[in-house]
Length: 490
Image (tube, rainbow, N blue to C red; front, side, top):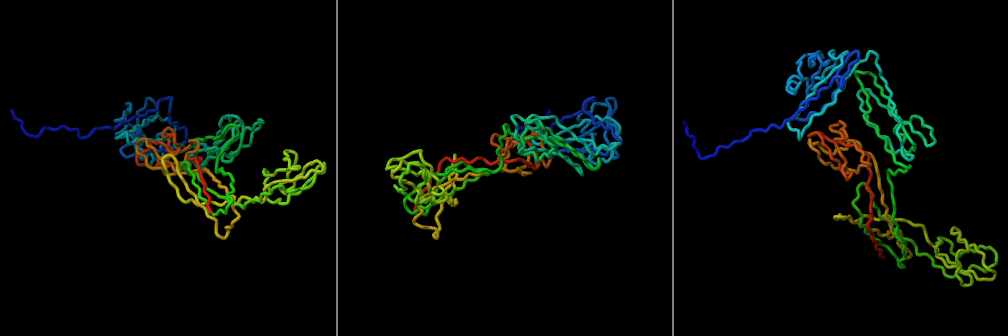
């Protein structure tokens, strides 16, 4: 017997924990099949995403009773087993993606209905998941190079106003997809078939789509329509593109020569929208009191004001023998003429303001901008040039112009995938939540990403290390003015 002694304790550890995961997909007889009713099979079109540490393998069979086989370099059958191809069999003997992509002729598939088994495996399911899509390149004995599909009719509620139709198509080689729309008008008649990009602004009660596919050779090109979505608003209302709104202050006469203006605006944070400040300086108007126009005749008569230019309508007051008259006369502001039926012999007088010039808005310069927790503060300044300065301009007003915009973004790079769901910030705000995400150029299914409550952020489960890009229509956030104040100085 041996004695074990020592001062150091014995330590036990696990050198490596195996967290690998795999799955096997097998088509069922009478369900999903690769049907090759053609004169020949020229290859397989495979879209695969295989991050590091992942693998995809394939086996095939011609019916439920035949053995499972792989394809050799000539596209012939190389039989493997008659047993169900569990993961161990598939991973050790199946075809790889690269082996299948290299095939240019597959005689083993010609004239047969093919069932398939696929294994997908990963060493770390938290970081990397393989994906794949497979289709057959068939050579028909009577080649069909064009095809047309019609959709059913879809309702447009409450005389829908069509904003646009968005489509996603996949083409290879010389393949082409054309999409058309037909609109049913409110009187029940139908429009001609219109290119999908030209239906913007149309209204109707229902619509349908027509897709036309064409290729020049089955071996060299393909065409498919991935999706088509119509965007419309009920009731015929639609707000898109750039728009602007204004806030104009009261016009104030400071009764002194004014040269400088400073304005502070407290507003929300701006994304793709703008705020601009303007100031207007005008000459002090004439204040005419008790101008005598003439003597009443008892019949309808017109009287001319002495200072008609720039007459301000709401300042005119008419008097008969010093008695204020309301609602019994007409004013022509263009020529400065008052028409009334005054009793015979009364003295007709008027008080009014004239000399009001046109507003000449001058854009103010942004002097400073500060960001705070719940708002932003912008300060604007303007000083009249010396050669325009005089002592008569004392009437002032300020104006705030808020401008919004919209547009389209194609293939904006937003980051790299991590294999886990992550939040990514976009450059702009997504309009109506519609966005397409691409993983290394491959369109991701809609379930792979979600738009956050803040529509400038999107959560994506992208493949680790792959570049993520986004295409979407954007719209700016509406500016909100919380408070503004203007100061004038001579």
